[in-house]
Image 1 (cartoon, rainbow, N blue to C red):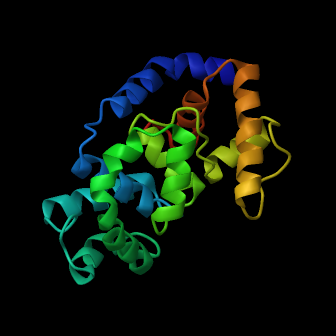
Image 2: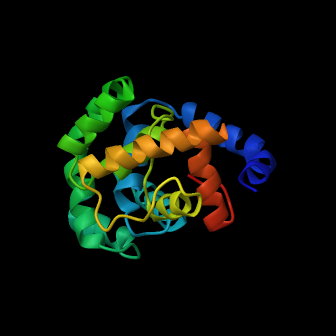
Length: 200
């Protein structure tokens, strides 16, 4: 069943991952993707993408005050906290190309330590979306539910500490090898089965 679904979507998944690898590694492009990932916790990816587009079109993404950014983020859950995270993250814009060039595990630790609002899931998501983290697991609720469904893990954890994240990431890697589907492909496959499309 899983392999059949993968065969049906493999070309589309590979095309999408190629898109991620080809994203310009400029500070502005990377920051726009970082903001998308800051918005995603407990929110729909499509709506987060629309919010980033609104911020770009209104020219508030890079320079707008919190009061100017907030209206464009308002449809997203926890918009006040996420607005603060976006504005604070600007101090890292010029560092993002260097972060993108780090080894993925090192880059993820740097992002979690330095960017307000980014946990391991969001940092992994960002790195995958800029073509720098295809071996990292993006452990959102869709992925965790599917890992339980396929018996890679026993249950969805109530909380994800760093230790628990690493444990489940390792189990996902083992499952990936067992079914012969790369981990980045598994992520998009599981996500598409939940959402009905391959997005990001």
